[in-house]
Image (cartoon, rainbow, N blue to C red):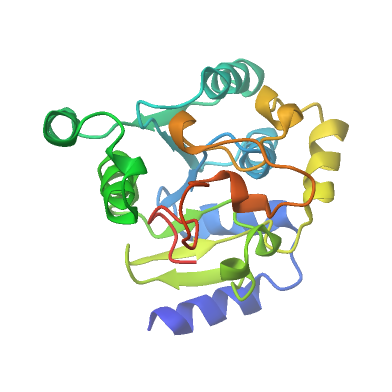
Length: 233
């Protein structure tokens, strides 16, 4: 059934622009369309499109408790510019307390399992709460971000969260994202101009060099698919 829905949505929106598709989804699934932002460049483009067209789409973010100050700065600038609420979800305090009491503040450096445990508590569990009861989840995923995302479609069924994902910028290049931001004066994280491309929690993100993969700055100390569990690809 879910595959049929994604195919139907692909067909119905094939000739629509991103803005028109967002409006179509907001109308088709009233009050059940949400967009998750981490205030990266892709997410800022989507926020701008939603806000400029005054679309009834809920924007939310996950505050893990370990974000860069620069991320909070662009969060604040985005609220000021677009005058649209961004709902915040936090991890359960007791879960964070237990993790730190048992393993200390930097257990994620010790193994992939520990890192994924931290990601689950700080990101996956709050995301599960944010997505509950909704039908469409809009993301800022792009195909060129990693090999794992090359085979994504514009609409995908996410079995893990039992929801349809819409990836409006899937085929955009990073240069197209940057051009939209510059042309439309969209607020962006100051870290992007310091070599940070993909920005997550402060202890787990570093700048990259010109010859490195886009995701190389995430969990750079480990060999993995560079995912935290929010997205299966």
